[in-house]
Image 1 (cartoon, rainbow, N blue to C red):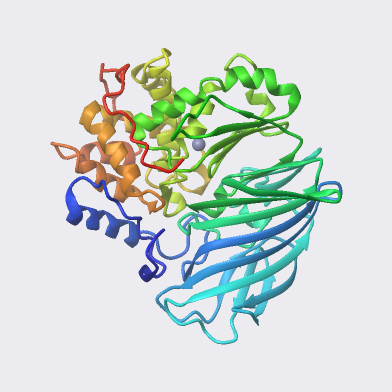
Image 2: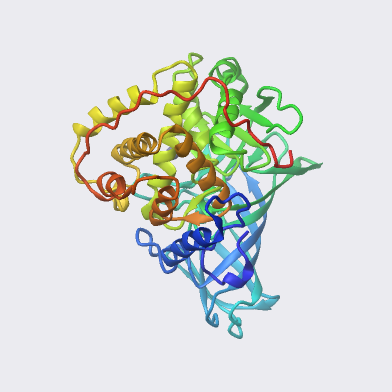
Length: 488
Ligand SMILES: [Zn+2]
């Protein structure tokens, strides 16, 4: 967690393994802070940089038949550097029953997805305060250029996949990726349904015909990464985590179990590879849910959501299994300060697909880079990775060019420095929020020659540079055995 004294700036977490010493580390932190205050350039209506949240406690009751959600949130927050006379949470069209600050009734208005709250007295700069909100209604997805986001009622259950702005479809939040908090989520629903959330299941209590599931996610989590699935699922353990290993569970409709068992069989090996290349898995456990209805898989904190269409029993979507797992490091643990920097999530997850392919006997990263290069060459050359614009933030070119950029850096740095750079990045910014400028400054510390040309051409330019070339493969045996310093 960020130190409380930092106000609403997005300082990074403590970094015991930062190479280059404290001066460089300070410079990297300063870059992160400088770029991340103020409204999000792509979604100015979401989030509020005048305060930050450090914990959400959500108590929810959900009835799948009538699709009825009733919730109470207890939000522990800290005011920024100015007195807080009013602030905003994002919450979709629910009936709001009560808003209190530190136990006292607060004035509020609720319009257009924004819950504006005015405390009886302004909160002092840097002071901690608690907001309580009660709400109820029929949750539905938030509409967006990418279709409905957030809470989705399924034929028999519900699913939450919020990237980028779907979180307010089900709970009040400071909806900006840089405002990361811990979560405790309690959900009561009819006992026939299973509830899966990212994090550790603390208790499951059945009373009469309902069951209450309580999950705890202690790691700092962006609001859009709080995922949820309510449905009829079989639960299986993938592989044997062994002592100190990461428990990996699958939650699948029973009829998909045979196909799932084949398609996700190699996920434990991916976990091993990514820990070797990126450093220890950043959370306590990892779960995947396969639901009947989902166009594209989506990452959440400690959890990934797939559709039935992604399991074919022939590993047809294995690259996506790798992609979503890689987001746990890139996007979830190391998050972006605002949405302009989305390539730091998607380009890295794309490159992780190539690394998995290379290691598992498929095409090499070089071959996949060549294919990506051909693809991008055939498309319009007007996308800038560093600031793609809201319309293009999930454009194919952002993913492919993002992967190519990592490949270009690997070619420029060499394998040893490149993977040390990635591990340093993950260790230094664990639980924090970063920008493209932070990354450029970080990568430069591992290079013997300046990397400005690489960043200018690939990240800041729109023309397609020539395909970078390198012939090395990641070694068959780890040169850096994973250090599992994390508690299991
Ligand atoms: Zn992705």
